[in-house]
Length: 385
Image (tube, rainbow, N blue to C red; front, side, top):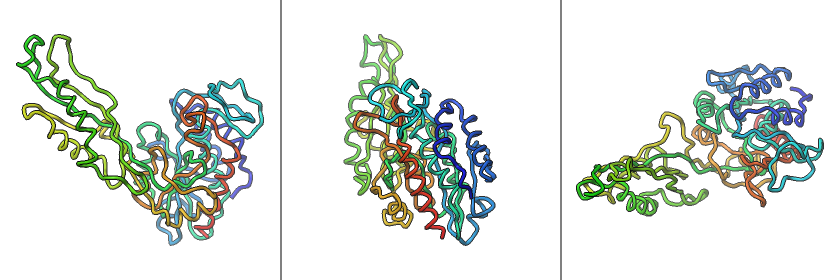
């Protein structure tokens, strides 16, 4: 399609563009780049950017006889914004502030360098340089992966494809599975009373002690068990709130939890199963409810793609990386409900110093961004030949 795409220049411009609070400017950068390459991108009702090569649009690609592959990542980043730096050595424990910019070197620092503007640059390079012979490829870039994930969930609903590559920092490994992630609350309801006469009330905070203990035993009695790839699910109580006055028996106590699920568990069935389990530990005179936080927004469910799927084997052959689970929840879970899905890209979530993605020292190796682009391009080319 075009040999004029400058991966390093696009990545620099993308990292320099602050997309922590608004993606408008970053979306304009992406649209301008696609249009300059002769591609006609579209912006959907949610603000996602979608473009297709090998067919007039993604709907035509899905209806055609050839295979249809989808490349996905996101343009939003977590705050705070970190300035762009190019250097020869990766950062230590210091914060990236722009002062170490050498103007050269393989290391690019800044917010989004690896999550996910490095993967974006790689996928965009592959998309603009691939020449599909029998099929089509769609680039679908979402706008709120770091928050509500409505963009990715919408893309998965409206775009039908035969395989999905989701760009995230995997260290160039091919990730075929990830735990789900959702948050919720356990609300215990008792009856208020004067603290001088506690027996006349039902103390919801006191009841939280056995409930917290029961949460520890959930996996043994109700949980889905260990997954062959993802291992054991995780249930973590993260906050406890209750009471309105120091001299009053509290009528309500809320325990907030974080759940990292494994297949076949879903967020919907988990709440009912957890409530049934916890009520066995609650006095009959008290009430208990379990509910999701933000129930009207999507949650990334656990997923696992067959490691022997053609998409997995082809991408692994192209990149040489390991096949393994991904260590964080991603929008890949929405696409995995519709076909073979892998998570792949340059950069790492953490290294031997500490956190990288989302951290004060976020960086990526530019050579890895180029390697990811080549691997995705070769994969798409082989699957669509």
